[in-house]
Length: 448
Ligand SMILES: Cc1cc2nc3c(=O)[nH]c(=O)nc-3n(C[C@H](O)[C@H](O)[C@H](O)COP(=O)(O)OP(=O)(O)OC[C@H]3O[C@@H](n4cnc5c(N)ncnc54)[C@H](O)[C@@H]3O)c2cc1C
Image (cartoon, rainbow, N blue to C red; front, side, top):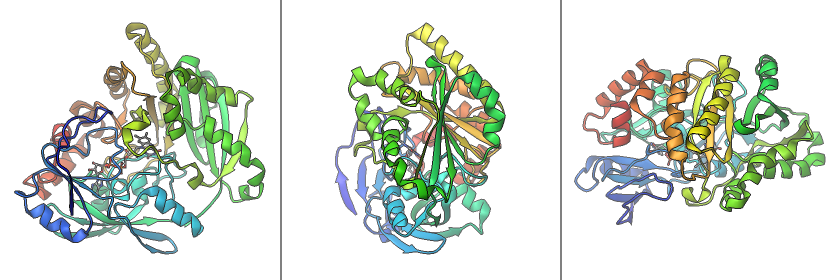
């Protein structure tokens, strides 16, 4: 292990403060048991950090030991239906290596840095194609971890309940050092875009959610515009792919602003902000456009220091059945908030449809099909206050938050959304980690 940082005090520029006493870079899995056992040398809490792109204090530091997993970066074994890799491997590295073998993950995020360790234990919902596969953690079929007592443990999908709890455990039940992920043959994705008003969206909604494929939305409350991105897996799309390659370039530049580094850098220049907001709709104002690509092609790496992206967002999920109504309420909320506080977000809000997925205890779509809503911003003044009120709005409309992507979360939001599941998880956590070796103040506050 390498002791990396001696004075890691203070908040970073994203406002997410950390304050560990020690920051270590893990090189060998064999070092983990003694790290957990020696609480004098390695102060509590022990918290793992992957790429460090979470939007909340879920990593946390609290005067303890923060352990970086970046050194565990080996892909160990490619199989026909699975791949085995260490926890520090970044999803972009894995996805590229799989693509070279004609394979892909069942879900591919747009951001490349996510570490496989974080993917296994945190909530990363993605626009989904089918029930049971709406969060990245559902791609994980096996984990190897070290328990708070320093014991090695292997868990596979055969132990369904245990796996479900681990996939939502945020490093509170153990340290993941190796994972197995499901893979499938690489398949082109046909992407269609349409721009519509909320009224049009509402009237077409029953048909939209019935159709197969994944749905991603880009929502502008002040322009009454919803850009619908419809992704369908389409083997035949490969044939026409080269002809539309140039459109793809423009789509990537103009149309996928929610999580792109391109957008992050544009946002750094204040004068261009409105251009970003309306540019996507201008680019699409001609109506329908189609494009085909492989999912690995939409993956982007953010700037190295997370905060340099200057792109922040928060995420809640809402029941699919009432989603158009919820969007109507959100539009009204944004307008009335602006009237009262003169603040409005300067980036379109993203949204993804999630099929029901019970693969993890705190899955955003555990109780049924959902749509996320992700207000986004470049982090300008007023954003943090907006989120406090937005959280109350979201919670009162039946929203489900995440622990790593929902900012300014409060215990009452958590209790309302997860009910008995919180009690179950907390009881299990107390039993497996009675000395609170792995627990930080963020989770103590939210989960007890
Ligand atoms: C600008 C931006 C764009 C984004 N775009 C996307 C996107 O397109 N799609 C998407 O799904 N997400 C996206 N995210 C969200 C982000 O990827 C995740 O919240 C998070 O980054 C998960 O990966 P990480 O490696 O950074 O996790 P970290 O923040 O490092 O850790 C997340 C949690 O997992 C725990 N943990 C990490 N490693 C281990 C381990 N080995 N064992 C046990 N516990 C562990 C940590 O303690 C922490 O609680 C984006 C975030 C930002 C800032």
